[in-house]
Length: 233
Length: 101
Image 1 (tube, one colour):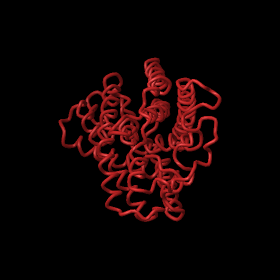
Image 2: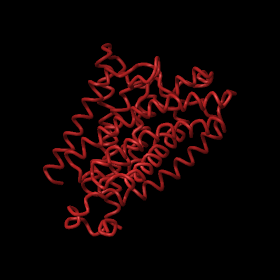
Image 3: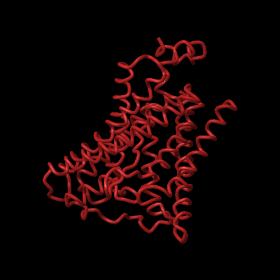
C-alpha cells in the first residue's frame, strides 16, 4: 500500500505529515516503557523482519499482489508504541533507499501502515484476548484477527485521505469498493503471516512476546521486575 | 543478555536474511492492491516518479548487477541490515534514556 507522491495533494500530505510527527512523538515516549535490555534488540530485529517480509509479495487475485504491512505483528511482539516505531523505521528506509513510497507521502504512509495498522491490530488483538480462553495459544488467533482487520482499516483510511485530497476526480464509491475488496484478501495473507510468526515465536520464547505477558502470571510473578508487578495483578 | 536470548536473536536475523535474499526471488511481481485499484479506477497516472528513483537500490534492485536474483538478494540484504541497525540503535537509545529518568 505504499502511497507514491502525487496521489494525495500537498495540503492533505502536510496534514498527514503533522499527524505522523505527533503520533511518533507519542510512541517515542510510550516505547520507553516497553523497551528493556532484552526487548530493545528484539524490536530492532522485528523491524528488519518486517522489511524482509514486505519484499515477499503474494498473489491475491489475477494480476494483483499484496504484502505484509506488519503493524499488528510488531505491536503484538514488542508492544503497540514500539510496534509503530518498527514499521516507521521500515517505511523510512524504504522511502530513502528503495524508492518505495513517496518522500512527500512519507507522513501518509506512516499514518496508514504504521499508526493505523498497529493501533487497530493491537486493539482488536486485546479485545479478542479478553473473549478467548486465557491460555497462551489464544494469542495466535487473536493476533491473526487483529492483522486481518488492520489491512482493510488502513485501506479505508486511505480512501478518506483520497476523498479529502485526491489529485483525481474519481467516484468515491469505486475507490471504496476496489480498496476494500482487494485489501480484505490481502488481510487474509496478513493474518496468516502474523499468526504463523506469533505462533513460532510463542513456541520457542513466549517470554519475549509482549502481548503474551498477561498469560504468564504464575510463572512470571517471581521474576517480574517491580514495574510490571502492578500490571500482573 | 543470556546466551539463550542471544542465540534466539541470531536465529531471527538469519531467518530474516534468508527471506530477503532468497525467498524474495519467488515474490509476485504483480502490482499491489493500491496500485491495481489506482489503475482500474483511473487515478494511477497521478503518481509521480520517486525523487530518489535513481538510487543504487531503487525498486529493490542493485545498480550494476545483471543477475536478477543477485540484484534483488543484495538489495534485500542491505535493506535488512540498514533497518536492523537503525532499529536496534533507536531502541537501545530509548531504553537507555528510560533508565536514566
